[in-house]
Amino acid sequence: MRASLIQFGVDPQESVDSRRQRAASLVREQSGADLVVLPELWTVGAFAYESFAAEAERAADGPTHEAMSKAARDAGVWLHAGSIPERGADGGLYNTSLVFTPEGELAATYRKIHRFGFDQGEAVLMSAGADLVTVALPGTTLGLATCYDLRFPELFRGLVDAGAQTLVIPAGWPARRLAHWTLLAKARAVENQAYVLACGTGGSHAGVPQAGHSIVVDPWGEVLAEAGEDEEVLTVELDEEKVAAVREQFPALKDRRLGLRTPGA
Ligand SMILES: NC(=O)CC(=O)C(=O)O
Image (cartoon, rainbow, N blue to C red):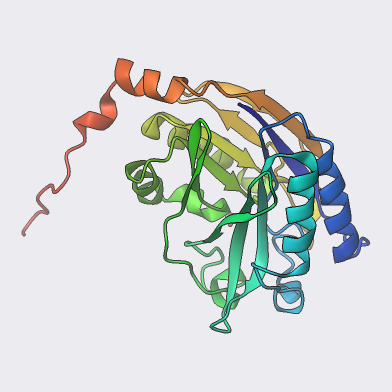
């Protein structure tokens, strides 16, 4: 399986619609891939808080849905279209990822579970998702997470328990915590014996310099590809047999001890 990660930049001078058109044309250029991944909140910028509500859209029939559905169909690829500010039917604002089939059908949505900001920004503006989401593709099952979720290993264990073999993490990760990003991406791959496809953003979002450094890590913890800081497309070949092979040869997941006693309980 060939996967392409599009490390997209958000230029404040560019309109949201122009970003959509540019992202769609970058997706179309990846027609040789099986799976294409975009980053978090690329229509607005991950730290452009004032744009979240203004540019929020429906996941199932908004303008990003329309542009990305068409791009997936034109390229004939599975498309993880990163995330958008979604206005839910309940009126809530969510940081929601969209996954399309090569026919342009919306296969899954995932609402970011852990909101970033410690009582500011996304943490107060957005509602939290509550559902783990996996997507079965020919040859692998994706487990979905977004940016700050990367810090919560129990979410990824839940995805692995639900059958995930390839963990896909669109992000808008700040440059000042780059060391955490690469370390956590490798840790999630090793501890879950899964591929990690972590797709970041380039440039600067609302004055916050972005880490870039999109990264693909294999189930043994080897880095297959890593981007620089600017816009870049990473293309990697994933061996569909490797997850099962690593889990069989080094069966640490089978040694989990669940239900340990709490002190004093
Ligand atoms: N922006 C995020 O969601 C996560 C982040 O910045 C972090 O350091 O974690």
